[in-house]
Length: 172
Image (cartoon, rainbow, N blue to C red; front, side, top):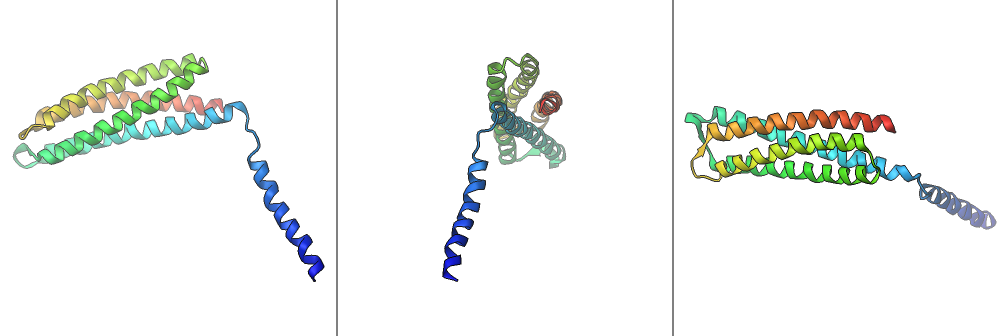
């Protein structure tokens, strides 16, 4: 029995080592960029959608607030969250831009120009919303107007982003 144990252990160890070395084999040159494009693109889309959802939640809250009196704490939380998600989306799109520039992908750069313009519009309206929400007496109507612009800008950015991601997925 002992004489079977050593070869059996050696066989088990060999079975464990072979798949590990195969898994660590070199991937093709485009595998990394395809995977990272997918991560940054998906994460950027998620951030834009989250910002848009927060904007919608805040508008619903402000519309239904008794006597249109908005709790400044709620307004600040909403404004902070919207801003955080817009900033995250911009960072992910900046990463995608660097990769598109490195790959001289003019079609992706054109889509990113559109997305970046709309994110910049959303960020500008967010700044106005944030300033409104820092006041002790938050103007519900003014903050909701900012959210409408944020929502419209993000809707355009998301639509362009969806087209971009479908095109990139088709390239795989």
